[in-house]
Amino acid sequence: MAFKAKSAAETKAAELAAILVRVADRDGVPVQVGVDALRRASPRLTPLAIGQMFRRHRDDLEAALAERGYTLVDYADQGPGRGMEFAIAAADA
Image (cartoon, rainbow, N blue to C red; front, side, top):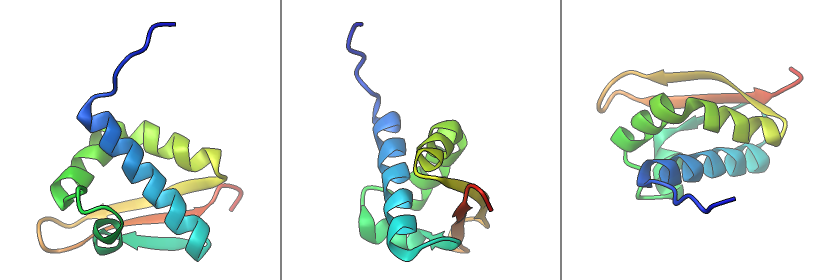
C-alpha cells in the first residue's frame, strides 16, 4: 500500500482526537471538555481550528473515541468568545 501523507487538517484532527481521549482517560467519563483545556494541551488548536476539525472530521474524532470505549454525546459551539465544549461519555452508557 502506498504511503499517503496527511494534510494539515487531518493532522490537527488526529491531535484533537488524541487530546479528547487523554482528557477522558485522565478525568473519567462523563466529562465536559472546553476549549480552554484543549488550548492548554495544544496551543496550535485555536477555537477556529477546533470548530473546523469537528465539522470536517467528525467521523474520525468519533472513531478515535470509540476505539477507547468513549462516545461523543454532544458538541456545543456558541460562537466566538462564547464557549465551545465537547461532552464525552462511556460508549455503553
